[in-house]
Image (cartoon, rainbow, N blue to C red; front, side, top):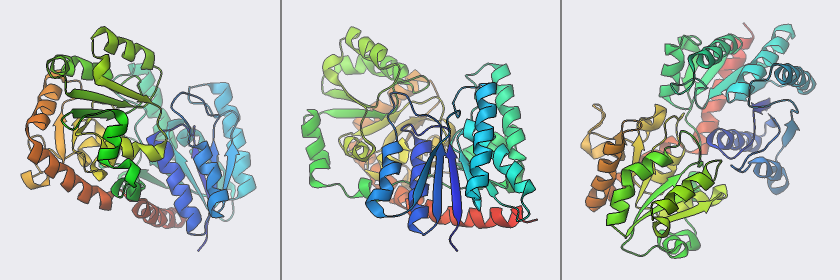
Length: 413
């Protein structure tokens, strides 16, 4: 049965939540659903998924209708938030969707409130309301008062929602520990990715071609990151952990893929440390080229302080690149370290985990990767096989079909 589906995202910047949302829209349009995507004004150095989503219709003839919500902003702004609520409520009434699916915290709270209000006044009990948790807005690095506001807001929104989909089991655990929602509201739907683009590179984007393009020699040990150069992504920790090793090993190279507000400061620090010749910073890279960059790496280092399920980790594994990562949120659901996780055996290992912000163990993990060529290649091979099944877009879209059916049944009760 063809549905009318409205997705709501705070912004269409280039990030995991936004990629997940756009891929969901594309997959659902290809199934014949009438898909709408609402979003706030876009700005920032991260890049945008707007063109990707907007061009999909022209390229494929499938229907995704775009709607900018003028007052949907990321920061807390009572006046703008109220106006955004009114704008979304009017849009929902106009479209009359079967399902409203919200993404990210701000769009999740305002969008669910607007959709629930319409649903409760609609004789047909439309729309069903679904929310995806891509990452919790509350975390240990915020002031207690701000966390309290976020938790209260999420509790409010959970009562105005039929189903909550988490991209990782860790998200469900964090929300339930904060007494948000009910156990039977939650289901895990892992983020879909364009796995074929990672699994089957074109000739110009193979490991050999990319190392040549980026200026890496055959014997270089390339440690890569794919993340915004911004707060909580761990680039300073990386420099603290690996600075001495980089100076002692000229063939150790860092590949930083991404841009962000901290770019100038971080690259200035690299220069001050005398490491400019060993750090390649690509700046913002179009989404389709991320896999190409990853193939040039010997290991992906992901020292982030907070995540939902970091898409970078399974994407690297899809490229058969093993991972060293901080044990942030859902990371351990793709990066399997038998020395860190009791339930994982040696023949399941896909990477190395270390405690968040632990400089010493991060250094140990990278040194181990450097010294164990055979083991790290096996990790990459295992990870590729595992992630090709777990994180395909088709799996995500199929799972969402089940979620929507359940949500629509709940809406009619």
